Length: 220
Image (cartoon, rainbow, N blue to C red; front, side, top):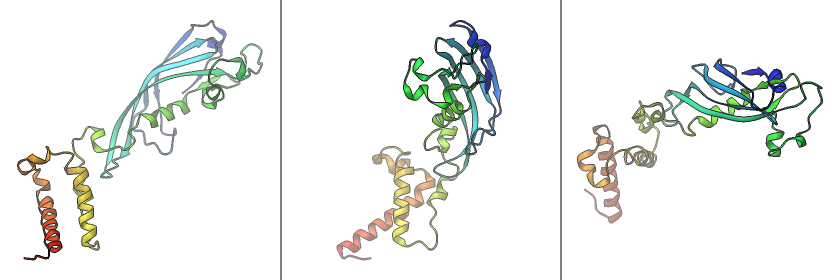
């Protein structure tokens, strides 16, 4: 993902180079687990201030479902469009101060957008940032194309040491998040409840009824 643009910088504005990428990502970021190489087409355009890099790239990564912790494979596709500026002139070697370029100060001084003294344009940091931005913030099985988490119910199992109050709280929270959002409106629950949830909802309903009886001073 490094390109020698010395010759391109010597050419007039509008000159281009096109590259077909198939890049290994295994050492890009220790927190990323890529399964495929980075592929796509990249276009380098000579501008009056440097080189504009644009293209659409894609790969696939292994991540973990935020809900059930199952491993997922997520396809990632993103567009790149960044303007890189040279540190030095190709012909004279003169250092070019950021003030000589137009643009936002933070962009002009961003090391990830600099063409170094050897005229090497490196897109690795830009690609790394774009991959993170393209990933879902809270990945779930649904992002991998699965309609349901493969082990949602495991998240609703209660440890034997948990108290009754803890049990009620856990099931209530899980029901609200996982059941009520996936079934039809509440008025249709009696005829549309997923059988996987029936016993759980019956248990909660019984405990809620017992609590109401205790509160009113009645018991069976």
